[in-house]
Length: 141
Image: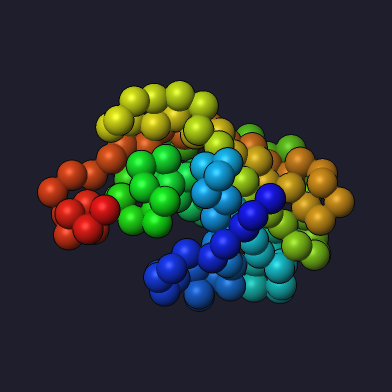
C-alpha cells in the first residue's frame, strides 16, 4: 500500500496528541497512527476512549477530504460519529483506517477501524461528513 504523509504541516492537535497521518491516495484511505504512551491512557491503564474517538474521527474526515482531492485539503466537518469500543489497547501502536462507504459530492459516509499492531479490532466507527464550501482551504482545492 503506497502510504505518504500529507504535503502540509500537521495541525497542532495532531502534534500535541502525538499521532501521525498517512494517506493512501490510490485506495482513498487516510490513516492515523499512534504509539500509545502514558499520556493516552485512562484510569484503568487502557487507551482512553476520547483518544480512540479522535483517531477515528480524524482518519474519517481526512478520508472524506481525500475523496475530493489527492492533497486532502478540501475541508469536511463531522455531522455524526458513532463509535463502538470492542477491546482494550494498553501499549504499542494503533492505526485508524478510514474508507468511504457512500455519499455524493457534498456528504460522505465513512467507516473506520482502529486496530492494534497485531491486527485486533479495538474500536470501529461510522460517520457522516459534510463538505464545507466558501473557505480559503476549499478555494485552494
